[in-house]
Length: 319
Image (cartoon, rainbow, N blue to C red; front, side, top):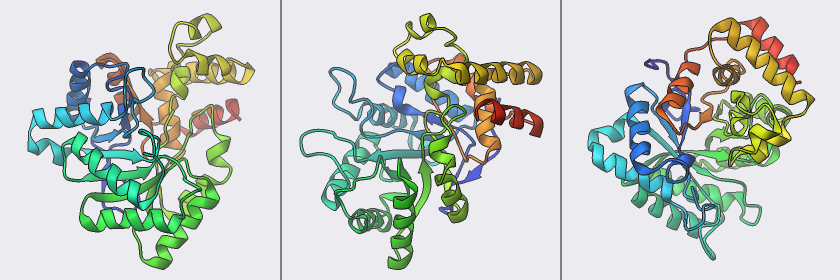
């Protein structure tokens, strides 16, 4: 299955497949050999968009952060220089990487980007994103530093992750008035179960400003795949604690709607959940896979088009 369609990443001139592969699993739930297999299959299938962060996977005992970027970098080095032009790498900055190593100050951003470039074994990052807002640093300082990176050629475009509507609007205003590189994308927490945070205000800002939307937790930590139906199911997985909280009446109603849509379209609940995001105007949902079979299922979502009545039914089930 080959993904041929591409979508613009804001007005950056970068185009991406309608699905992003979440690299948070690299070096955590997926070892390096399997990571290479998954990356190879992504490229062979036309999925050109990789999402990672410098902090992946610092939460794992014995890890210090940078594990995901480092695996991608070693894969790039092993596949040769031509591979770099075929993929779009998005990474993030700002979460704690050690004592005094966090935030969005100019000094820290300039240090952190060079470390990410070194780990990724590349001389540019396609999309560089503050991982979350840093209220302690003026937006002017953060945006000025990011603009420096764009002008230096270390970064092609910048985006925001986990910004609220008012701060996102303020950042866009500052960039516009000061002639700085602007955020071209937003990475929000958004999926069929978690809708209000994005749809209440952020969606309107993104539409008005022409920002690409690349939501994380697109499958609600696996809940929307349908593999968690009972508390016993949730207890079997490292991500099950999150899924357990969704096993309420609304969550079960959403699963039933996903099951019905999957049966009608000859697909799976996960594919329907991702296709729903695309039908709602999302640029490229981020989803992870730990096996080639799971990746194949994700790729199918990029080709699934839901009709209006199906989208309306899913909207109602998740309202």
